[in-house]
Amino acid sequence: MGPLAPNWLVERIAAHHIARAVNQWARGRVLDVGCGAMPYAHLFDDYTGLEFDVARYPNARFHIRGTALALPVRDVSFDTVFSSQVLEHVPEPWRMVEEMARVLKPGGYLLLSAPHIWGLHEIPHDYFRFTCYGLQHLAERAGLEVLEVRPMAGYWVTAGARFCYYLRRFQRRLFGPLMGPIYAMIQCTAWALDRLHRVDSDTWNYLLVARRPERAP
Image 1 (cartoon, helix red, strand yellow):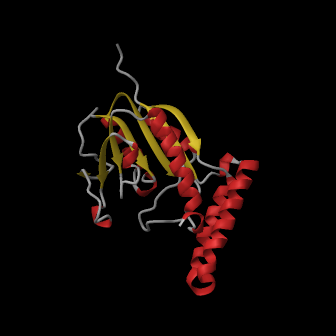
Image 2 (cartoon, rainbow, N blue to C red):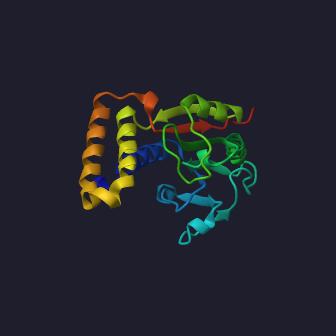
Image 3 (cartoon, rainbow, N blue to C red):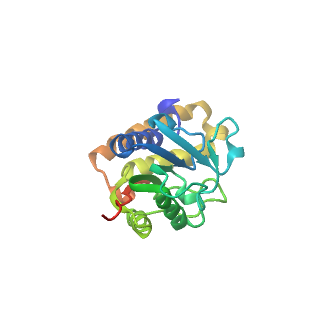
C-alpha cells in the first residue's frame, strides 16, 4: 500500500539501513536469528534462517528451529550473524548477544537492529528497549568490537510513526477509507521534518554493527 499504510515510513527506512549495512559488512555464510518470514533473505547469497515460533509463519521454510538463547549451532560456524527486531523479545538479551558472538568466526560481523522508542507489541513477549549505549554494552560484554550504532531516524519520524499507530485504533469506527491519505500525509511530513532537523536521541530504532576480533597470532 506504500505511504497509505501506517508502517510504510519506518519499514522503508529500516530496509534502507539494513541493505546498506549488508552491502558494506556482510560476507560469507549468514545466520538470521529470529528470521520470521525471512524478509531480508534476498540480501544474502549464503543464507540460513533460524526461528523459534515456527507456527506463526506457516508458509515459511525455515532452515533451523531453535531459540536465540541457546543457538543449536556449532561455535565459529558463520561469517555473519544478522538479527532484526528480535532482541527486545527475549527475556535475557545479553545471552542472545553472547550466543551470536559464539557462533561467529573470528573476523565475522554481527548486524543487529533493535528498538529504542516504540510501543508494546507481540505481547506478552516484549521485554526491553535499548539505547545506543545499551547495545554497545551488550556487544562489548560478549567480546565483540563495536564498529557503529546507527540511529535509523530522528524525533519527527518517531513521532509520526507513533501517531499513525495511535490513529489505527480508530480506523474502523471513525475514519475508514480516509485513513490511508491521512497516514500518507503524516508520514511524508514527518520524513521531511526529520531531514530539516534531526534529533537522533529520539530515534525509534538502532542498527548495531560489531565484529568478532581475529584470533591472536
